[in-house]
Length: 315
Image (cartoon, rainbow, N blue to C red):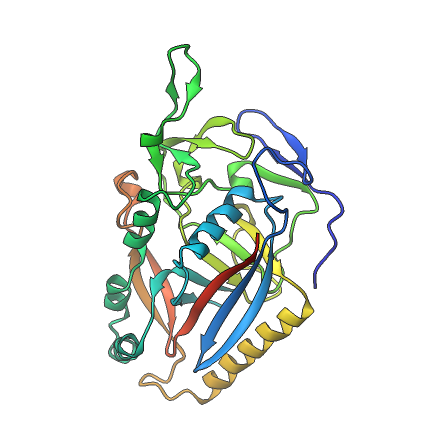
């Protein structure tokens, strides 16, 4: 399932086009390909799936993911949006028996919107940004020093992630990962027609101005669960893929367990999923009104799919 990447060149053009080999990056890295293990639980059975991360293509995205994983932020999360091609996770918690009761009761009673509001991890994410756990890459504005040089100020840092995808002019010109079965993608919810500008600091330490809506990803990532994606390829970064074919087999086992459960599900409405309308980015104090509290429909599962742990096994 994996492909050997011989050479990768990244072009990042916001004001100008810059190219570089995957073997050389301006950012400080330990390895080109860190590793991670994601433990998923479904129906009291756990599945440990190993991943290779692509820091050589998406250095800031991978660093952000590693920092969140090391902080324990991703542990005990639910898949809050279950679709035919993607699982969305990273925004809502699920930890113990009491929460299982709250989850299943909310599902049966049609109160999943209230559940998501109660178990949102948005504040926890902002807390990690505030305490310095997350490396800043997006800033409110470009500032200037006494010499008139463009600079960024620590007090202007925003708790969001630079968008390393083509809509934000981050282009992989050779050897780009394809949207295959099992890949991980960093995803952001559309901010709508908001025209705010921010300063970004890319992997070359360049300070550039660009659109906020393309630099507003936070903790949400997706796991692709089919051979083809339903997402727009311009608006996500494929930053990890299954380590080898054995990991694909593990994901297959998990998918089969879910399919078997669906065949025998006996929920109140007889469905494995229910549509839930909720809002995201409720605490985004920087976004204009049109870019805050955007409503989305999520497909919640009758039995939770739980991300029990995300562990970085190689840096």
